[in-house]
Length: 448
Image 1 (cartoon, rainbow, N blue to C red):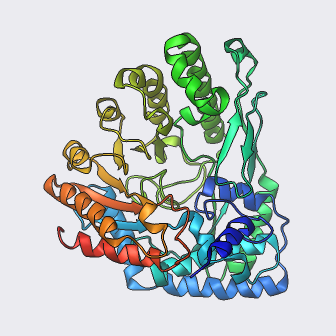
Image 2 (cartoon, rainbow, N blue to C red):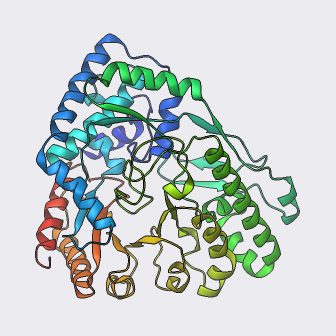
């Protein structure tokens, strides 16, 4: 068990010398650019370490239960009644499980790849949730963003776990000065990484490119960075035309980005390679699983508006939802919601075309949401990760939250998955992740 001093050290060091991010490389949209910024170098010693780990991943992937998990997600996402699916991602706490001192590779790229492989092995051998371990290694398309001309100045603590910012859009008249942000692809660096991964892993794991360019098209996350959290709320009353103009700008920017990626053949399927926003895994027969040059209609879409949690139903439907809807209309299947409770917004959210997954946040009433979701959508329950942040799990509290979830879902015939995510720390006890997963299966068996 890690001491408080050791926990602080792991958060500062990440993968060594601050290399890495505060999500434990769990978000491909941020992990990809990180790898793309590193030199394309894998020394011989690193290569041997990576090949040994890759062989272990391939062995795990061949176990019959991994194939069963893959099929289970596909049935679940087709709204077939299955047992509840359990997904546990330690996220930031992966650095507690694999601190920099545990990594053997010396090169920056080698440490990133080693970390990813060690996570797969730990998932398959220790956590043992319903996340399939597949015999593959993904290289994210290398890209960067252009600026908007007006950028927020972020002030963060030494570990990046808390921050505030100075919003640049301090006057409504400055809206005309913002330029649309665009994605700039780096095909040469992407090809170098793919060739290197193929050379290292090609006889063990399937190597393919993943175009992980975004996490969410919620838009309000950009609004608060540009305008400020409180100011966004005030603008709904003091400057409604301005706020509509800003939302329209961000919508046009997002649609321009999507159209450009689609026209350039840069999009790749997202039906399973990573969890969808906050909605578990998207394995499905309704969308392609492999290939490049797919269209938006071949992808899962995702949106949320956590920043709008305190606004009224009327304000959400006037200022936020219409702009999100125009984006989601372009995708083949959709998932909605993150940490915001959706009870008040349900009348709007249910209008999303091809909506398949709905997130039930820790601050939602599980029974109310189960009644509304029923068997028409996947009931994606995000549990509160606070119980994990202790040296020993508060099992009574964790079990109660799980029981409330499964009881509500069972009462309304829901297709349910339970996610443990947004974990900042395991309290220094790395066994907490596997222990929570065991609790989730035990409580699930009471009802399903």
